[in-house]
Image (tube, one colour):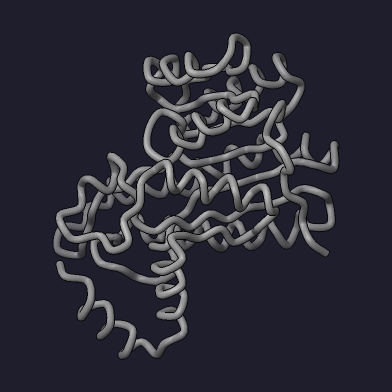
Length: 258
């Protein structure tokens, strides 16, 4: 059994959460250009309004919200239902990243990271899944990270949050495949965004947010579950996962210069 893709985004009802910058903004702009109806969500209302102007009148909904706030998410989804009757794709891109190592570990930062990066997507999925199950169609796409593949430097909270997203998506795929609802697990490498601008080390295979958006939308169209990129980097990290730990840690220390 193979899950379905989306042949054409034109006219599709898409909720992009995390649409105000980086990968989310690039995806939203590309979807608007392709004629999709896009609900734009993030905490930055002014930026969302600017992005909405790039589309035609009535093509987008601006729904500011914080993914850690259950009520705001619920009210946002109700607004979409009132306007469009449902959604065809949930694209959850929102996330937070604060570099952390053991010598500066801050549990408050870790709690905020888990709340936004793991519980945030879970809240959104819990909202949209009943309607998709009833319709026996729909797509759930969640942006994780290759940092979830295995332990990497300066990711003491971010890495575990993304590792959990991989497990969550795997479970979703297994449960939803027979129902007609498709799941897309998205694992980018280094992408030039406000978040990665915090890094003080060389980021291998760095790509633009626009390149990342092309990879994501192409993968969703094909119906892919495991959307990872850039392949020259993500495949290398997938290979590292199967190595014995002594070799794995030696490779990371050798090639990650921080």
